[in-house]
Amino acid sequence: MSVLKSINPVNEQAFAEFQEFSLSKVKKVILESSKAQEEWAELNIKNRINIISEVKKMILENKKQYAEIITMEMGKPILESIAEIEKCALLCEYYEKNSEEFLKDKYLKSNAVTSFVSYKPLGVIFGIMPWNFPFWQVFRFVVPAIISGNSTLVKHAPNVQSSAIAIEKIFHSVGLPKDIFRILIIDIDIVPDIISNKMIKAVSLTGSEVAGSKVAECSGKNLKKTVLELGSTDAFIVLDDADLPKCVDSAIKGRMLNNGQSCIAAKRFILHDDIYNDFLEMLKNSVSSLKLGDPMLNSTQVGPLARFDILDKIQSQVDQSIELGANLVCGGKKVGTLGYFYAPTILTNITKDMPVYNQETFGPVFSVFKCSNIKQMLDLANDTDFGLGASVWSNDNDKALSIAHKIETGAVFINDFMKSDPRFPFGGVKKSGYGRELSEFGIKEFVNVKTIAVF
Image 1 (cartoon, rainbow, N blue to C red):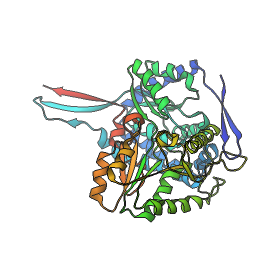
Image 2: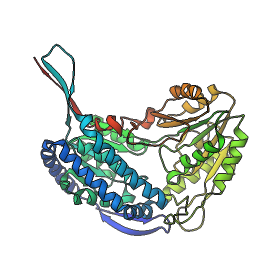
Image 3: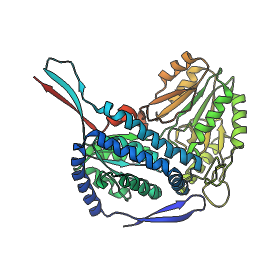
Image 4: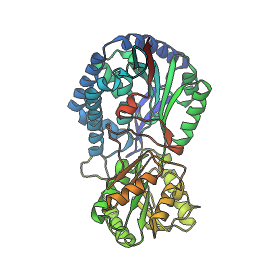
């Protein structure tokens, strides 16, 4: 068994170590989780919701403490980390208010005396979570799953084990039976054994396309339900009648959230040529003025990338694209000698053979394109293997809606940048995955939609 380390991306120093679980320990945890789930499912839903109410209170009372764990572990600016904790509380509140209605029996018209659909838990659900939103990603998987009567096991990303353990302690400290939510400190080599275990009923993964395909393959062999939320190359489409100051401000927020390390970050900026020069100049001025530094300071807008390999990959994608003819407007390099800091970067003159055209750039890189008409903009937006989110900017809502309907993604935001919201279903199409999280759709992903008819 090896050790997982939490490394501060500001100073590259390890500050915590975690011993991996053995396979025998993992099997024991799965068995205990399965037994606990049977009792948990028998509880009235109000009792399960009450636990989530207590979780909400606890994270709000200690949000600075939890935010500092996030920032120390993966470099998110502290104000964004606080916002992440507050968003987890909003999710708890949303399901606190709506779960009972979502999961109540739905009566159907038929020739039976009585017929209805009942939503029953599946059992033990295995979640494989990413590092970029280490609290939010776990909460949006765990909260609806346990309210609906399932138990949950979570393998978090190797570099955010401090966040994982902190989350587990939150749920256990407010009275959730410990085997209803457990963290598995493991690396990827044990994942197939977990998925193939007969007590695991379904799998939820948020991560890369490669990870998603491997989990889908293993789950398919074992006939397990999966929900996959993978990467994307989200389009940010700006028409000639857009409100440019608002648009540029949102472009910065939409791309730079979490230091650019977000699957739903705007990545490809598709501009009408009538406003191209003005937008690009405003964007350059705004990007160049962003304050990069210690993410623990409230004044910092850009922190380090989470790991060296992420920094190395983004540098390679940018360098290769420049070698193939992309124009570097600003940035394009590591900042400083210590820490994983990367300068916010703008590239133009991008062609199909360049990595930044259709690969996901998981860092602060703006790929900017110029188009002369709406058809070109739509063709470019859809010329990708991914389809998670997009945004369209125009003062003509009818025109924007017409474009939104034709973009091949799981969501389109008009005159705002793409974001996740507990009230909206979240997920993608194509290689961005399948299934939905959040909203009523998310809580029903891991239930048995059971028909009962009385004749």
